Length: 276
Image (cartoon, rainbow, N blue to C red):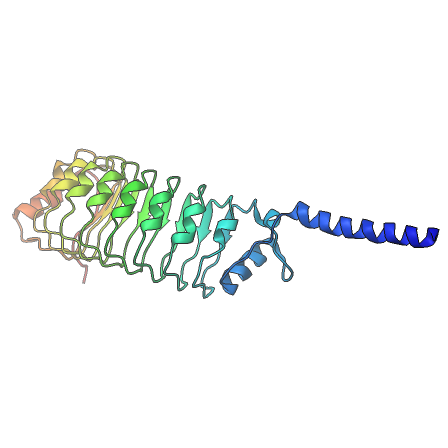
């Protein structure tokens, strides 16, 4: 009888120990997309078995490039995430990201994203790369006021009005869109790098107001007057400007050539025409 009692006590102890371990590890974390789950497993070096929330609650950085990920359901389990790199996947829906309150850097270039509404909830976001997606509307970005670096190149954008709200921006990339009007950029006083190659911009007068610019590239547009660059008192020694393939007059004595020479005299590095 005594042996049976000891045996039962031993069994009960084992059960309690096992269940206690489960409690200590927290609830099981589930991911809808097996490719996202695989990326998380790689991060915690766990190839099989259940993934528990306690095992992933301290992950601050996740890189999952070209993993074939389609769904982000379950990514909210990564409650401490600050950096998320998801470039070159097949993601369409960003709504699972709204719970990532500490996210500071998000790279989702080369996906299938058309709606960025969920990003309006990420108020700690500082670096955002949305290059090569299907964007036509960026209004939600007006709410992401802490952004310092924003890449929107290779989309289908024509209206960039909301960018005027991003006063902390230091780097902005707008290459290969359908932009004609850049007046909303005039208020971005902290901007040091600006790129809008391959658009339909004619008037660059707003650039006269962005006096902290250090690197500016707007080749392949329809600009015929670069006097706003001369008017920009902040452009000078060591700064770089590329405005090749626009509608400028390079003939000797033209107003455009006079402005180019003024910029060169200020020791600004210029690329203004093809060298071949």
